[in-house]
Image 1 (cartoon, rainbow over the protein chains, first blue to last red):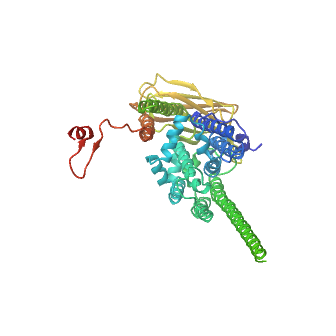
Image 2: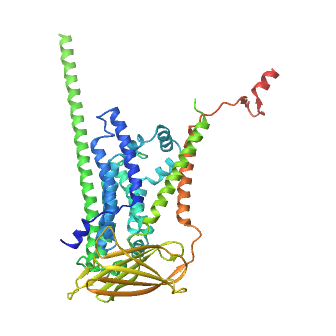
Image 3: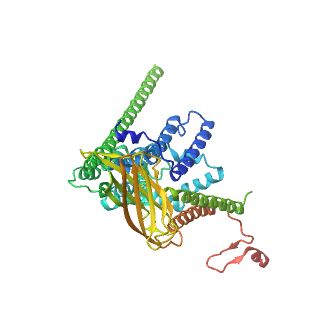
Length: 304
Length: 212
């Protein structure tokens, strides 16, 4: 068995600082989901597929931070890139697809639920702050800047050497990714007018050039950029430079492909919406014509 | 009807719970911070039949704080292919330069998550100053020894970073809850309503009735 595969199939690490918040959020969602389902089993807010998306999102965080991928990230840039991609390209959108706000809200005790609702729906600082940072342009800029800034050689090496910087890196990646995917998925609470589909397509495709340029530059660098990886044993049959080449390609291809896929899905949704609109319009025209012709027949009969 | 007092009590309970939760997470997170990464001290150094790598954390070391040492024991074949030594016995000796007679000896444990020739040691450093770290890797191929020196700073007064972070988060939560509660609290009617007539001085309603 290849040594990399052997490690990947190895035991997972128990990290309480990751597990505790996830268990708390998962429980909140589960209670809310059950309460909503008790009211109606056919509602859209707490559907089975949303439940699946939410738990897949939480599960992907566990995979990124507690599986051997986390350990391998300190040995191989490629695995570190894979870890980051899971957090920003899989976990964040999946959690949004689970519609966490309204469902988890129902998991709270009534008094706390009222407080949260007042905080978000009323004229509070929380709402004002959320509204300010959830503007699509701000979301895009904050995520893109954070994402690219952490790929600076000094910061990246610092994260590998100091554990709390590493944790901060993952936390900011995840939180800013949540911000980025918020207007794309159009998740609740909706503090702004929904972005039209063409706007969302532009939003995700605009991320492709900065990401691709950075990934391409890392993959094609003639020397090792992240020097920490020259201080670890090369146990998996690739040199630090080869590892960097693959890691850069992962960044470049995975993220770009993900964005293009999302754009295609949005395009599909847009055409579906347009099709439905046209169908409704045609039906309305047909009904109007029918009633008009019926009225004419009636008038003719009255005239006779 | 539940008044503002009830809301305030409830708010107090929520703030208390939030602070407890933040502090619990911060406390639980502390031991986990010692794992993974670290500052490279020895990189691919020959030691007997082996090649050793050593990382230390945190950076810098401090007296009365948990310090972490990670050792990787590897061996390279004639073709240059590197293999991990997974069954080595790694002994770490910490020798304070000020008192060489009081050396501390420990057996490093294999990193539990992965069996790839990585061994680690956690230890609460007793005193500041210069420390000589001697590492011995013993395996089927022979014995390799390596040493380096590291300086430990005096003990920090308190882990201020985590406490400050916890207090900051708790303060934000408290502010938000306070604001939400204040907006929800019903306004009480004043006993004597005051009326303003044009730009004239304000007079209590009861007084105006008496006058009339």
